[in-house]
Image (cartoon, rainbow, N blue to C red; front, side):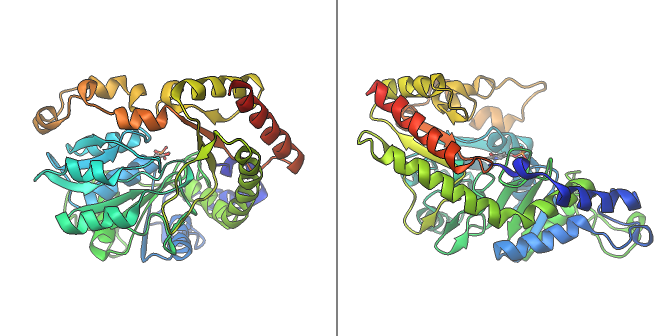
Length: 397
Ligand SMILES: *Cc1c(COP(=O)(O)O)cnc(C)c1O
């Protein structure tokens, strides 16, 4: 996920256009800004690129999830179903609204297991939040059917899958709402930033207001605007949006190189019969930002990961023990460590995460290694990396 690898003259030019006017805010100051509306321009360009009606840019991917949930009317006591393998932003955004994260197992797609989702639905469930981890997607068709059947909102966290497609649509645009992150390590970066996409006008209008203190954005006098409902400040600055605009131009090039590098490494690993690959749902194409593969047992996987590190191959992750993308790493969530009091609804409805059986997820994540794909590698470096990984894995089998 390498946007930062190619920061250059284009980004500097965009940022300088903002610095020259000194108008760092996305709203107002019409006469002084030399007609630069970087956030607005990003939203229009991104919506077109994603083939979706609306885009709302905000200050981070976490903010995007929070604003998306709020825009769909999710609040205190509403249950949101999310996976055990994700980034902490999933439960942070849900808890921020007083809603209740309900964690369920993943399957070999490395995303929500639809059977586990259906089993977790209660009368309080409002939303299903699949997280398209490490470049590929959840079984969206099945999840959509579940949402339709139970009248639930489908909110896609596509922060790690920008550019992946499913049944001809960009992931993030299949559900009711989709979220992206443009933080520093994502496929493209704003420095910090995030976006909500939707085809639903009501959600789009809600998001527009909610992320800016409830301002209705009607007219040209900010002080005279009305506030149909309470909001918050999740605005992006023009400087961040400017970086994003330059990066967006580079997206197609990034995806192309990622795919080439991914395929070279995959080909090398395919020669090992014990290695199998992450399941991509029928109709899906990954964005190739990670190569995710399985070994037959947890013990072999831990040893293979160690051997890969010892072979000085960087950016290969064993999430099961070494990172906080998996529930094993969320001691603070499992024990509900917060600074202040949690809402009663959360206290009453949260699962006891220390005593919930996630052995199905353990059986998947315990056998998963994810290799980040960078775009700055030369062909020779990719070949050497593939060879080193192959030898390291073979050495433990
Ligand atoms: C990065 C990320 C986020 C949050 O993004 P930030 O911009 O860092 O707040 C949310 N979900 C997933 C899956 C991510 O990888």
